[in-house]
Length: 308
Image 1 (cartoon, one colour):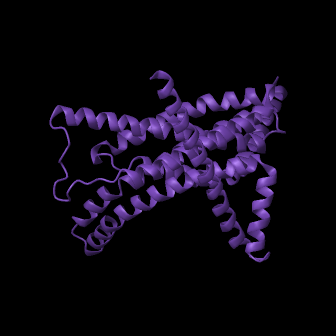
Image 2 (tube, rainbow, N blue to C red):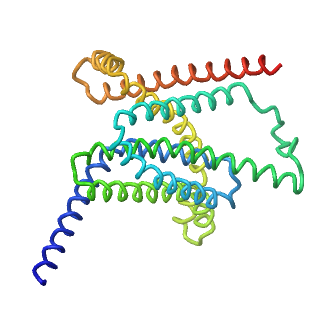
Image 3 (cartoon, rainbow, N blue to C red):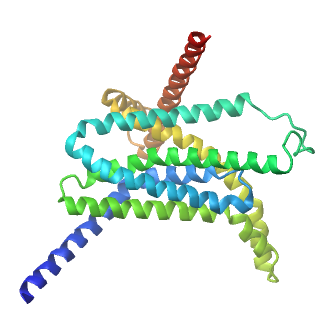
């Protein structure tokens, strides 16, 4: 009996070691998506009232955990019953990301605010109405962030599944769960830290230490620029991730883009070729997003004509 227990413990240790090794490998493979996930989710919190930033981050993190709780068993079942469906589903998700990216850019270009600088409250509802409007906008941001997270989480899960496809079921489940937890905690922990940088700056600026005050003032000066940069990076990430997924699903297009990037970089400059490939993926994402926006707009008009 003692020997059987030792064998069981040895098997458990072997599985855990395999899970740890494969988790490290999967984390390297998904690092690029992690950066996009961070930029996108930090962007979603911009514009939220300071005292509501952490509750919004927590709400999105909770939604992300639910997304992954759905995606992990779903990916395992699909990989077993219909592995051919994973690619098309990812392409649909990539198309949705591109669509949202184009919509955000068009909204920014076509719906500029004409409110005078000194009259920020003009046009806003007052009292309870303002609170209701703020709550509705907050829920819209949370819902949009959770939808975006679902697509990025799906890509992370599929990449991870590809890394551990040949491993036993126990190892596959262990790695998928470990990556899901690490990505959720890592991304939303960093997002929470980023959105509260201004609070840290205020606290340091009020300290008695000269170094603390200088550091606090520097953080306060840099925080708005960081949030703007993350907002731009988040929108760019929609095109990069969505365009990359679509290009990868079309091998001829992906190979043509890779060859063009390598030729433009002179064939020897790998970092430049990588940057050009990212730009090409972003271009594919922008074109795909415009196409989807055109289809959606046309469908809406046709529906309006039929209803009228």
